[in-house]
Image (cartoon, rainbow, N blue to C red; front, top):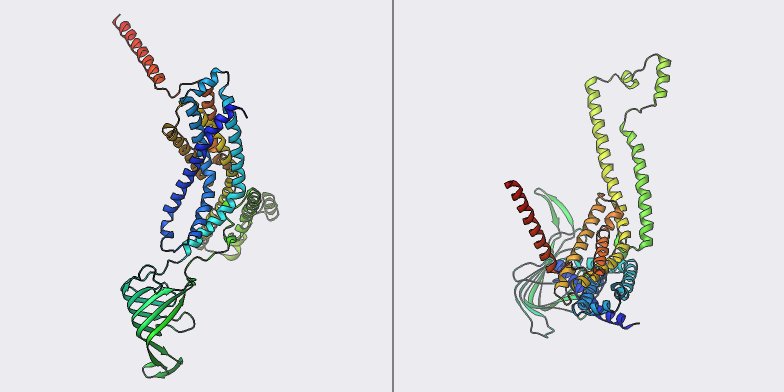
Amino acid sequence: MKKIDKLVLGSFWGPFFLTLGVVIFIFLMRLLMFYIDEFVSKDLDLATFGRLLFYFALLTIPTALPLAVLLSSLMTFGNLGEFFELTALKSAGISLTRAMRPLLIVAIGISAFSFWFNNSVAPWANLKGYSLLYDIKTAKATLNLKEGIFYNDLPGYSIKVDRKIKAEKGSTTGDLLKGLVIYKHPTSGLETGNREIILADSGRMYTDKDRTYLVFQLFNGNDYQEYSDNSISYASSGPTAQGAQFMRNGFKDYKLVISLESFGIKRTDENQFEYHEYMKDLKQLSALTDSLRKDYKNTSLSVAGASRQYYNYQFKSDAVLKQKVLKDGKWADSLLTAQKIPQHELAQIALNQAQNILSYSTSNVTYLTEKEKNVWRYQLETHHKFTQAISVFVMFLIGASMGAIIKKGGFGLPVLIAIVFFIFLYVLTIAGDKYAKDGLLWVPIGAWLANIVLFPFGLLLMQRARHDSRLFDKDVYVIAWERFRKRFDKNAREVQVQTAE
């Protein structure tokens, strides 16, 4: 490797990894802000939270790579231009394209890595990340008793405390509770209502070491229970239950153990999420797209045959009608002549039949449109396996060319320009996807819209950079404005002279 290649690559890798880390961090913060309500009060352990962030950090890499390549290549050649190293290279007979060659090879390698990542790692990370996020969202909040309010999230129990005193830090006896009222509801069988109530002057609440059971240690109270043998007698006032028994048990120290099985995270079967197009690689997407196309075609062909049930009689070909006319001498509708249907009833029948066929057609159009949109979604995701990889190369062309033109390094102007181009890429991608999913654009055009627009722009910037364009120099535009103003003033004076003559 020559010194020029070491110089360029050494200037590239630092900003690249820094930018990649910053972009991944920003996207993770966006995830946390979006789902912050789902995370609070769920008592997530660090291992679960770390796995969630790891999966979503993997998902942000394909999106972060284009911006990282754009900003790092722009800063690399901006620094070389700012410190006149590009000028020294050109004076030594080394062209700009030769100076860009090591980064060009690196950009191609990152594009290949992006394609492999999108096809192999991203589907796995999507499946793991979104299934874990779903489990977190469906998990119940941790137990949080509030003073004077019944807590009903424990299955089979309603609990109220008059006063709650927090336990000291490090204590294993739990919070001290005053004035407890615990209703125990039947969770199975035919019994309804509150059959058992526990009243206690005080108590403590804590969980076992495995956090699988919640323990209420109650002091100085009573347990009231009602039993019934379900026998019924019919008195003059109506049916009444017989054999009902009431029992009261007093206690000084009583432990009530409640399972916390309904709390925490329960892992669902990941196969439930595999239907989504983001969970598929190219081979699976291709097979599913073909299946959806065949299903759409078969369904559309069956619509015409199924619609015949909405007609009272069938149309025949012109040849059959001509033969019937020649044979009988005249033709009349057999349905009318046979059943003698009055004209007003016939109009109502026709109206009902027209409404039925309209409803049938509308529902089938909606159904077929949804099927076709599913085909478009899978096609779009297939193209995105390639478009995100190519966008890395496009961003390199723009970044390296812009850096050579503006000749500014650091995190000032290059960051601003990089963000503008990245937003442009992101907006075009989102717009193309939306138009493709709605059927307003052919799917390949919608998927490749951002690259189609930005790739010629990158080639134009490369051409301008090779010819030492002063595209972003203020003096160029000041001089051009002065020339235009002088020419305009000259033309205005000539018009005045001609008018005076």
